[in-house]
Image (cartoon, rainbow, N blue to C red; front, side, top):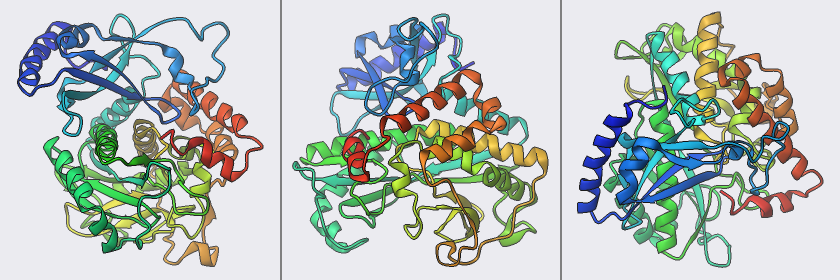
Length: 445
């Protein structure tokens, strides 16, 4: 079940939360979910209504399963578009006051039917099912999702032109970055890194690894927090795959490690670079499915303006130790820190779809005993030593349509909704120039 606790217990837990939040000066709670176009949608309630919302949910129309980046909709099955209603049920375990939005709290929401049954197209529910399937096999997963963004001034231009990774940017934005750090820390997150990135006005934050569903929740909380802090500093934020034509884009790299019995299977094993056999098979499964997974992790037309060679975007279907041109970069280190980084996913993606799809593909690799292909030790952009991933959304859609694995993992309804959104967005932007695409989506994410 998506809903972990019975309604009566949820109500009792919500009453306790109301008392706690009231003492913190909270007036309202935002319930968030992410649609198939990667747009965060929300509803909010006054704090006094949290108990009722926790018990019965808040209404949400199912047509958002087919919403596009521009708020139009892909065609629904005949006559069903405006029909029906769902309930947004907040996850009280992730309820947190928002440090940069005084008076507000936030919780991710599961989407349920009126009777509380899981909605088959709930993306968070899909990620949870995939995580539970991993656990049934005797494994666990630790995951983290990097967040990259561009800060712009009121006119929409990058707010700093300082050098990539340069101290200049830290000096110019020290108060801003300190407030980002303090807000994230106040919300219970452990920040690992916070630094300037490559593109003009670009920054990145990484937080500690956690369970896969929790990592997707945290990625959304980080993004909300960064945006709120930026607004307080008079800045605009873009998480779009590419901010300016020809520049390095905003990735949303997924870091993941497979564990069993308290042991990290990316460290200390007999395989290449310390991989255990199960980890090799898991990663092989993801590599095998990667072209289709791009329909989840690189979901928009703009995604393929980022996913180009020689941009450290992971445009090649290969793996390598610390190889930043490979889609799968293996990172070695301590027993706790070794992991695989999937670089080909961007910030337009729904993180729950990405997490769920990667876990499903990895489990398929384990089931089939897939061997991990030979490592790519060089720069595939320079040598042509590896297969290029899909270079456009239509190519990714074609791979997705061939994927029986994703159809089964997502379930028919969610699979078809994702497909409808991808096809509609490909049609929406057909004939657009690259500059037109970027202009259309720059401030949508």
